[in-house]
Image (cartoon, rainbow, N blue to C red; front, side, top):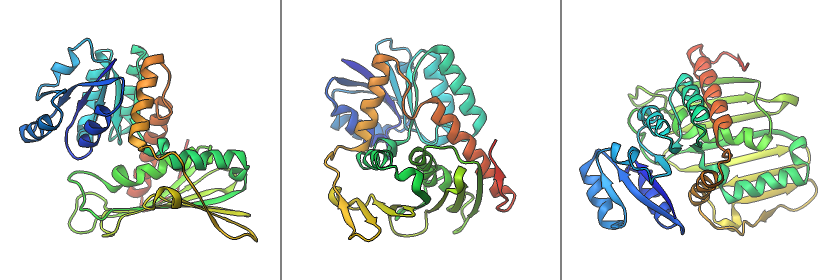
Length: 320
């Protein structure tokens, strides 16, 4: 029986509480939050889990093999560093840290401690995304790709102290690289802070890849509509992934001279469940996660370049 712990029982932490407690062969031994009301509500639903306001209860428990961190972004670094220092495997929700230096520090520490460090980049583990990745590789569509257009907007208000880049656009940053199979070579970004927010709540990003491939990303907190759409366009094929649709209508394919059709996704498992199962597997056999150190380093570098472009008024930044 693998024993895990959770720090953060808020909006996304609730999803981890439900998900991990439902996985066979896993025990969520501890859950921690500073908010007593959140702890009280969760304790009533999950009596098998111990709830605490003191994170050291988790870090000092030798039975806990892995810690999931789902707190506010500015607290990720210090919590992850303390957990890794205690030899625990760590799964950190995105963004892993809010600056590149802290990400590099966690990567070096996890390497020195020979433990798992994994980012909560949930979409990589999405059954539909896995299907698309397989399709790109099997049909050689990846080589034929011209560009990706990605839109991610929210119908909910902006979370406090969170930039739209860190909350929404980050998904499409790592996802575009995952699907194209190459690192971008330049980036251009423009963001705006509407409705008296100190953080960007609308952003447009262009990322250039080798062989002329381009990804365009639009993310917004003020769109007042939830969209999760990605379009991959090649010279012969167009593929549309709409995550707001049902499993049998999420992926639509258009071939030149052929009628478009939907590609069914038979696997209806939740991406978060697949992510947690992968975390457990990596702990069990001590292997590097798909969204592990190399992935974390890439995302931190790209976000650093995007902020550089934002500060310079949309200047093209060469990624080195």
